[in-house]
Picture 1: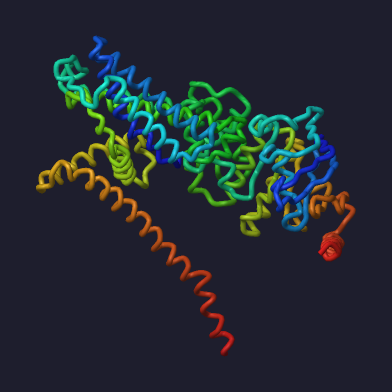
Picture 2 (picture 1 turned 90 degrees about the horizontal axis):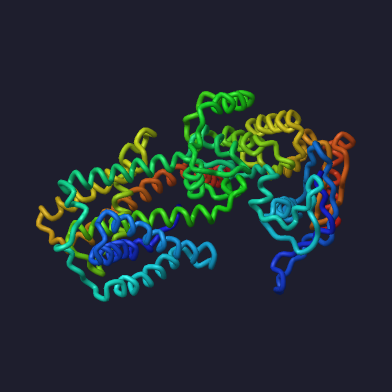
Amino acid sequence: MDIADLTVEGSFPFGAFIFAKLVTSGLNPIASTLLSFLFGTLAGLLTAILFTKLKIKPLLSGILTMTILYSVNLKTNGKANIPLFSHASIYDLGPIMITLIIIALIIKVTLDSFLKTEIGYLLIATGDNESLVKSLGKNSNNYKILGLMLANGLVALSGALMAQYQGFVDITMGSSIIVVALASIIIGDTIGKKSNRIKNTSKAIMGAIIYKIIGGIAIDLGLEPSDLKAVSAIIVIAFLSYNNLFSQLLDIKRIRGGEKYADNKRPVNELQ
Amino acid sequence: MLIIKGLSMSFNKGTDNELRLFDGLNLEIEKNRCTALIGPNGCGKSTLLNLIAGSIKLDQGQIILDGEEITKLKEEERANLLGRVYQNPYMGVSPSLTILENMALADKKGERFTLKRLIRKKNIDRYREILRELNLGLENKLHTKVKYLSGGQRQSLSLIMATMKHPSLLLLDEHTAALDPKTSDLVMKKTKELIEKHAITTIMISHNLKDALEYSDRIIMLNRGNIILDRRSKDITEDQLMEIYRKKLEMVA
């Protein structure tokens, strides 16, 4: 979909705060993590209703939900920072690396097979060409709602995983997460651009890993961890401007060969 | 058969810029025939198609398709009865999906979409057969993304997808206008073959008078929302049509 969904800035910490609430109330970490996914879908649902039913611009809808979630996040536990070191976590199951790889693979495979279903393809088509979805007799808004719910559910799930990894939740943990996500997707997208073989989900995962490696290199080079936000924004700017300028160069070439070229010729012909 | 009764529609209703386009238009489109709509820009051709398809709401009137009133149906509900091909070849397809995936989507039109796999092996041969009839070699490119096809190939695919489930009415909105003359001819020929083979009632908008005459059974000229000519296509020649076109337009201008 061609929507920059800012809801994620709220649903990432939302997932973490819901997780913290549930796990400190004594629920086991696996169930808490899964429930944070469900709560995340609700955040997506709110944004989707704002822009499909109330016709508020998508960007603003996301900002509004994000703002609401900020208050909600503070309300869930009554404070802005909750330590979780003393509580059980999903990483108690085995080595962190392997647990994370397994979780990522489960999500990837589930998502891939969902996108192969009839509904999954409608979701792709909604992002690709809404009028086709309408011509198939479907209300494309339903699929925008589905897409935003799914996406924010996954973001909240990531928030819960992050909370368990770092051992605390914090109200600021979602800030500029959209830039991190964008950077990962943009980097991932440049992998195997010409090939149909690599799935988009694999690209996103590889993009996220490469992004983290770039961040690691940046710190190795002597940058402070607090500089990383600027670094991720610069990565996004670099990749986007490269794409834009590159395509513009091609445009200039086309104009030279076409209209402008012909226009410039006309006075010469008249003189002759 | 499509019956339009007392159709009225204005743009910018309730403002100083209100523009009344249709004022009690009546029109019957015969079953299994191809009717061509011609007329200058702003005469209401495209608006009429949008009104039939439900993309624009009408102020007054009834639209009845094969005996069923569809006036109150939403755009996506009407879509199940209609096939539509647009001027822009990207409008009828999903460019990032492959030909096979697009065909499978079109094949599910009007049905419930579930969590079953969209692509079923048993259907692939049938899709291939349908594509083979186009004679464009698309049957060998099932796994090519539609964005890598040429405009003519893409538009032919749109046409196949729009007619696959034999709609009660096919709307062609200048569907060859964005193509070069040779490809345009080819797509028009394929269109004629398809609608004759499946006996699909068709309304076709064309800016090309020659095409409009050659490929239709009946020709209707619109100007400012009024029908100013309605003839059998075989009873009129291109020159006569051109003459009328010029005269009528000068008259109102």
